[in-house]
Image 1 (cartoon, rainbow, N blue to C red):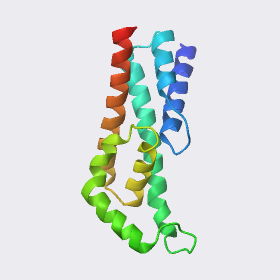
Image 2 (image 1 turned 180 degrees about the horizontal axis):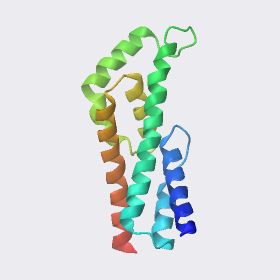
Image 3 (image 1 turned 180 degrees about the vertical axis):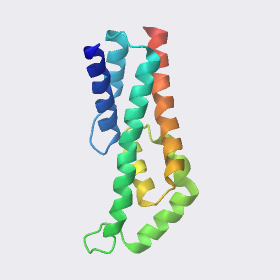
Length: 146
């Protein structure tokens, strides 16, 4: 029982950190857990999805707090660029969060959502859907071929 909790905790931590701006992936850990443990696919899906979604929530909050530094000279984005980006994000960016699962671009998208002050609950719904569907596809392929 104790080992099972540590295994799921490890999956959660890997999935969480993979969704932050730190480099890393969680797919190998998820597939390894599916192949080598007795946990149900549903349990693995829930743990990985929650961990990965919460990692994106961290990016979102970091983006929200980044704006408090926009008046500093060292802030890398001008007010004009920020205004233009906010307009683009208001039109296209929210839907782009359905790509939050993608390597390389997904994590910056979740950070940008915070910078652009996207409504949190809409952000959470889109990102959770994106992350969960990705893990469902991975686990579905695993079940199909394993």
